[in-house]
Amino acid sequence: MKYVLSLFLFAFILSAGGRADAQTCGGTYTVRPGDSLSVIADRLYKNAGMWSVIHRDNIAAIGQSPNSISVGMRLNLTCIDGLPVGLEGGREVAAVDTSVVTPVTVQPGTAAVRNRINLLTGGDYAPFTDKDWHNGGLITDIVDQAMRKADPSQGFAIHWVNDWGSHFDPLLSNALLDMGFPWYLPDCNLTPDIMRCRDFLASESMFETLMLVFANKANPIRFDSDEDIIGKTICRPVGFLTFDLDGEGRRWILDDKVKLVTPQTVADCFRMVAEGEADFLSLSEFIGRAAMKDLGYEDRITVLPRPLSIVGIHVFVHKTHPQAQELLDLINTGLRGIREDGLYQTIVEDHMTRIWANL
Image (cartoon, rainbow, N blue to C red; front, side, top):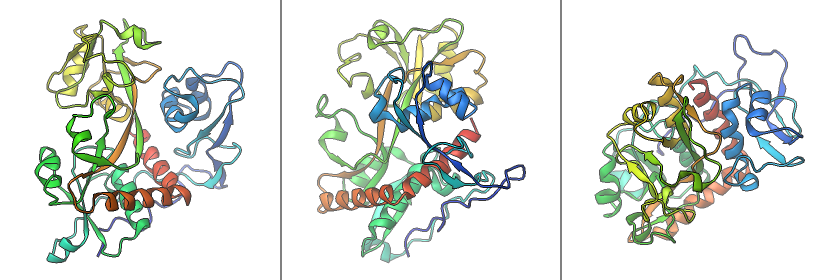
C-alpha cells in the first residue's frame, strides 16, 4: 500500500460560531488608491501582518518589493480561515476546523518497500514537515498528493529520518532512498560548486517562502533597498541557509559587505537583536513569527514590511541515481496536475489557516 495520509485533506465544516450561510472566500482584489499590502491585509484578513501572504501569492506580479503594487493591479488572495469574503472569483467554503488534525501514521515497512519509489523527509521542521502536524506538514501534504496524482505503477512510500545530516549523504547520495524533501535551492549560477548544485537535481518549487527581516522595534533598521544593509550585522542561527545573502547579485557574504553572526539557536538571534548586538535576524516567515511569539519578543521585535528574499522549497534527487531524471519528471508532472485541478490551492489554504491560527 502507498504511504497513507488522510484521503481527504480536510473537512469543510462550520465552526461553533461560524456562519450558517455559505459565502465566497478568496478571489481577486483590484488595488485602489492608497493601498499597501498591509492595508489590504488589515481590511480583508483583519490582520495587517498577513501582508506576507498576499505578497507570496502574487510574487510573479509584485516582485521582490511589496511596495511595487500599483492602482489597478489585480491580486489573487488565498482563502484563510474564511477570509476574505465577497471578492470576484471566490469560491464557496466554510471555515476550517483547526482542532481537527490528522497526524502521520507510519506504516510498518516490508521487503516490498524496496520496489517502490521511496521519498525521504524528517520531522521537527513545522509547518513544512512534522509527523505531529496535520497531514505531516504543508510540504509533506503537497508531495504526497503530487505523487498520488502522478500514480507511479510501482507505488511510493514516504520515510521519516530525523537525522537531517544523513539525508544528502549517505541516504540520497547512495540511492538508499530515491528523493528527499523539503530543501532550499541556492543560486546555482552564482555558486555551481555548492553540493546542492553540483550533486543534485531539484524539482519545480513546491512552495515559496519569504525570508522576513526581524529588527529591534525601538530602533528598526531601514530596508528600502539592498544598499541599506551594507555594513549591517545579520544574525542567522548556525546550520541555517545563508546562500540568499549572496544571491540576486548581492554578494554580501562573498565580498564581506555585511557581518554574519551565527549563534546556536533562534532564541539567541532574537536576544542579540533585542539587545543591539545584531542589526536584524532573518528567518522564514512562519518559523520567525512563531519563534517571536513563543519567546515573548512581540513587544521588542518588529517585522519589516519587505522580505529579505524569496526562497523555493524543492524535492531533490542525486544526479547519480539511475532514474534521476525520470523521478524528477514524475514529481513535476504530479505537481502540475494538482495545480491544474485546484487540489494544490486547497492544500495551501488548509495549512495556511492552521498556521495563522497559531501566530
